[in-house]
Length: 287
Ligand code: FDP
Image (tube, rainbow, N blue to C red):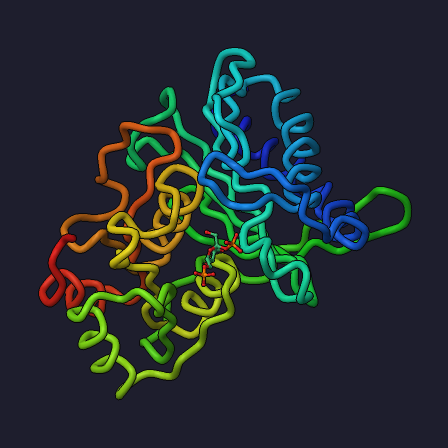
């Protein structure tokens, strides 16, 4: 298989198991008393979803590495694409029954490497519908996963060649510890755009893509590198946004140009409408 076929196979396998992931969340809403490599408490659902996806993805011919936000080390599993996964993004939304998702990146180099090595990326949103936003051949397409009888699913193309519309919404995370310059920036943005923040990266970025606008999880006074993990969250999502006609930045450069030196490295994250991303770079300084 060439790398595009491997990327298709990863997408198909993940899409096929999404009903199982959705229904499996019901009985796995408790914390297990462990922390992931980013010192965040793990839910039973985080651990279970990680194991499930790991088995599915490492069994694909043409996957060379598997790396998860929930695991300290990379798993070497053959020759081919390096796959990064955040198995359950926004999992603190599970106990309250709000949105969660899965983020997958496929790199053609060994991890850690820069986002310029991404071949493809997608995220799943487990909402009233299960949808997948995916980059293929440089365009962004959205699919709906429809359950059929048994374990079968239909993966239906819902929107093709998505381009972000004119900006209308914004959402910024980490407000308890914003810096003074970021507070000023937020104040200015809030005058022109409608606030939308749900606390799950996939859900919030999905609104940004559909409505147009700016999403950020900036540096914080207590966390100068912000919250998002470069390889598991920031790069795949920046890749999707940039392919949908938007931009991304860490305040100085595209997220995709940030040098990756550690697997669980964090990065301040800003993405969305191209002009608003330029405004971020003009008005905010790197921490
Ligand atoms: P979570 O901790 O629930 O897994 O990076 C993970 C993430 O969620 C993102 O999905 C979300 O955007 C962000 O963290 C939420 O952080 P805050 O609790 O600080 O709002």
